[in-house]
Length: 197
Image (tube, rainbow, N blue to C red; front, side, top):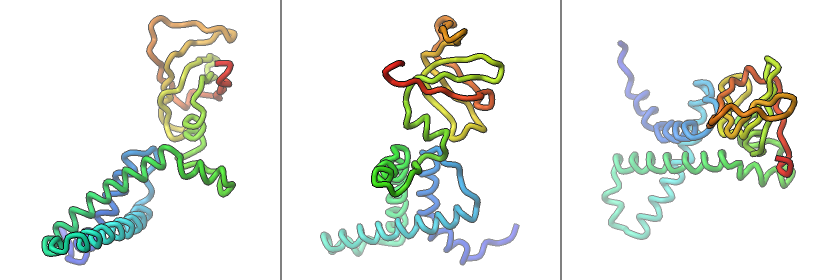
């Protein structure tokens, strides 16, 4: 196994906070992980953000408690960066999962996009209402979406309070808590208006 050079170790140490922030972000959102090159670029950008935040915090600490500068070692700096990276990752994930920033930008007419990974996820996240799923075999099922994948090509959609429909009349299947349906079996989805649901 080839030896890892000191430059590579130093670079990885420098990018560690950015990789940590990205790991938290992708662990808490439905966004797909980007390619390796894009991950390195993201880690670099996140590292710059974390470095700026830690430098600002360090400046405040030194001004408020001048004696604290003596205990601010390289190890303490790395720990501070990892803590800030984790907290920043959680904050960015919360903003992304709530669509808060994009909602304001849509109201201002700056964008029509959402913070969610795709149209499929966006529609289910922003329209929490009763749906009717039309399946490839000709059957229909109605229910409330509780979980859905980021896109319509993979994964399953979980419906609660569901019923199979025959000629638009519900046929309940006993004490069913929910149903898991492969997205590849869905032909199309109807979203029922809130006042009719």
